[in-house]
Length: 532
Image 1 (cartoon, rainbow, N blue to C red):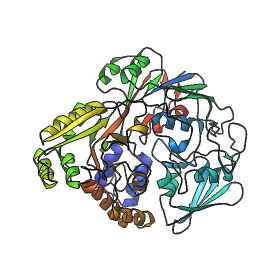
Image 2: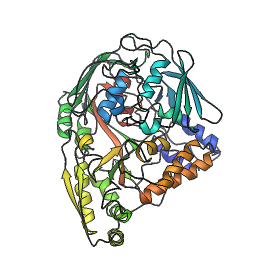
Image 3: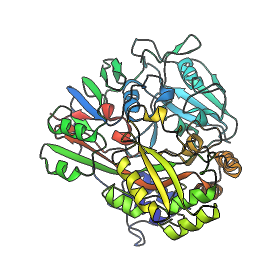
Image 4: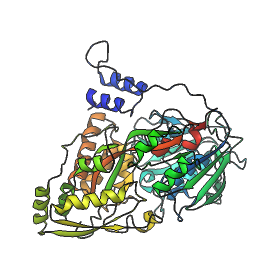
C-alpha cells in the first residue's frame, strides 16, 4: 500500500518528481499541505539552464572491454549502454523525472485486459543512412531478442510476447501470452534499440540507428567516437558536435584525466578521493541517490551454495553499515538481500537483516560445517571499491568462522569470463522501471542474467501471476512475497544500494540528472552540453 512516509522519502531523495508526487498522493487519497497532515517535500529546482550547441565532449568511463560489440542484445555495462543511447532511439524513454514517455512511439494503448498493446510509431524519422524508420524495423528489432535460440540478455523480458503484428507502416501490435500492465516500460530497456531491418533480421554491425549521433568508430576496450546527426528529429537534444567515449577502467587514471583537462566528465568517482575533487574549483561532483544494488551472487546449484543454510550464514556474516561507511563513504544505504529499493512502487519494507556472527555460525552448523572456506572473485570492473568491499567482507566473515579467499580478477573481460562463470563473484545492477522487469531479467527460471542460477517454483508462479494482475492491492501482496522469497532463500548477499557519483569540469552543463541509471540514465551524450 502506498504510504505517505514512503512517498515523502522518495521525494526527498529526488526519486520522484513533484508532478508524480502530487499525482500519486492524490490517487492514494493522501492529504497534502494545507490540510496540515502531510507537507509537500522541498523538491530540487532547476535553474533553467540554457543548452548551447557545439564542442567535442570527452567522457571517461569506468567500463569498456575488448569483448564489447555493437549488438544491443549483448550490451553489458555503462560503456556500450551510453554509446547505444547516443546512436539509437527506443520506443519509449524514461525521463529525468522518472516518467515514461514516448520516443519513437508517439503513443500506445492497451486492450482492456492489457494482453494486447498497440503502439503508434512516429512518422518522419530516418536512420543515419537516410532510410525511413517504419513498423517493420520495430518488429525486426524486437524479434532480434526473441525465440528459443536467442542469447539476448533481454530475452526474459520479451518472452511474454506471443506475436507481433503491423497495421500499416507506423502501427505495431504486441500480443502477449498474458496481461501485462507494465509492458510499455520494458520497451525503454537499453537492449531494445530500434535497428534497421535487413535480410530477415536486423543490421547491428554497422551501428546505423535513429539516434542523435552517428557512429564514427568503435575500438572495443579503448574508445568509441560519434558525431552529431544533422538530421536528428529532436531539435532540443544532442548538443555536442562530437563525443568521444574513453574506456578508463582505473579510477586514479580517470580522475587524473579529468583534473588535467584530458576529459570533460567521468563516471564512478573514487569515493576515497571525492573530497579532494570537491575542493578543485574547476570541477563539480554530482551525487544522486539511487536503487543501484551492489551484491555478491552465489551459484545456488553449486556446492556449498546449494545449501540455503550456507547462503543464510553468509548473509549474516557481513556488516552492511560498516561497508556503507568505509567503502561507500556514506554515498549509499544498506541493502536487505533483495534488489528492490524505496523508489519501486511495490517496495516491501521487510525486517532489516543485520551483522550477526553468532547467527552465521548457527546456519553453518545447520549446514553441517564448523567452519567454511570459499573463494570470492572480484575486480575493479564491478564498481570502484569492489575489491575493498570483498576484503572488508572477509574481515567480517572471519568472526563467524568463514574464510573468504578474495580472488582479484582482471578488469578486462570480467563480465564475460568471471561473472556467472565462477561459483561466487561480485556484481551490481542499476534499478529497473518495474519489479517485473528486474525479476524477469535476473530471477526467473530461464532469465539470461539469472546470476544465482536460482530456481524457485513459487517465485516463478508468482512472477507470471503478478504480471497479469491488474488489481494493485493484489500486486502489492504478490511482489512483497517475491521480495521475501529472495530475501530468505535467494542466492545473493546484497548489502548496499549505492549513489551514482560522477564528476565533470565546470564548463559542462546539464539539467536534472536521472537516477534510473548511471550517467544521467546513460543518456549523457544526448542531454548534456558545454556552457557558453
